Image (cartoon, rainbow, N blue to C red; front, side, top):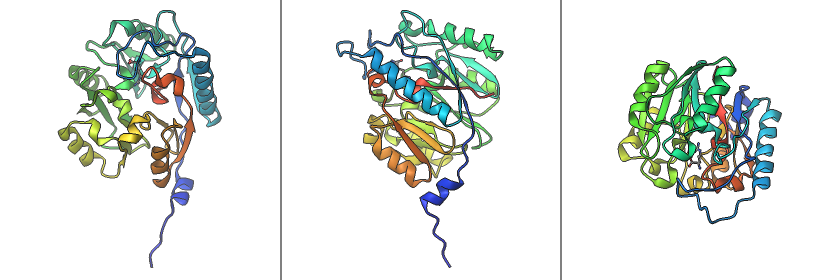
Amino acid sequence: MVFVISADSVRDLRVSRPREYLMCPPERFAVAYSINPWMDPAAPVDTDRALAQWTGLRDLLVELGHTVYTLAPLPELPDMVFAANGAFSVDGTVFGARFRYPQRTAEAGAHERWYTASGWRYVPAAHVNEGEGDFAYVPAAHGGVVLAGYGYRTEPPAHAEAQEVFGRPVVSLRLTDPRFYHLDTALAAISDDNVAYYPDAFSPASRRVLAELFPDAVLADEADALAFGLNLVSDNKHVVLPAEAAGMAAKLGAAGYAPIPVDLGELKKGGGSVKCCIAELRA
Ligand code: ARG
């Protein structure tokens, strides 16, 4: 006898875990300079619209049962809405960011002050790293593995630094397509033990490593990645992703997840979407 388990019944079996997140409202959001191929300072940005879209995302996370903390935006830091870049935390330890570009350097201190005031153990970084932009954590795979991107922002020595800070294996992955300049534009943890990624954003060797570590990964194609379909946040069941990424939502649905589309079109002008706006706090 053969039992066929449908995506619907897998979805019913998936259990979401409540999360804690840190976000920063885009009250000062602008595209004032260009440090990634998505940013065009000549294109108009509607800050009120960005704020309304961001508020929708925050309210959705709260409705899903998650806790969202807010970091106050500072003047002269128009990219601060991309809170994922400010640090990376695992097991209650926070590894601070050190930004590549001077336009964003001061964001690291704002994050440090928030974490320190909130009682987290904060370890400052010696090498350039852009927090969760280039670090992902998969808690139940390979004993708790950190996936780390390099090629555009984070420097490889920061990967070794993170391994010393966390005592978890850190797997270095080389990004090779400038449109996908941060790891979180090309790969996401979708469950406690699995990831989704766009293979062509990585070097052939890194692709081999990913295929070896995650044989059941959900694979994205170029259209999915260009729609920022990998810039998602998952609670192990619900996967919040940009509405534009309908193809990615279908793939995740077929794999037994519950995709929830949100419109973050205004923030995409800065080169970011759902995941970029959210730092996960892993106590
Ligand atoms: N404009 C920002 C930058 O280029 C976007 C950051 C997006 N964040 C992310 N986690 N991918 O630095």
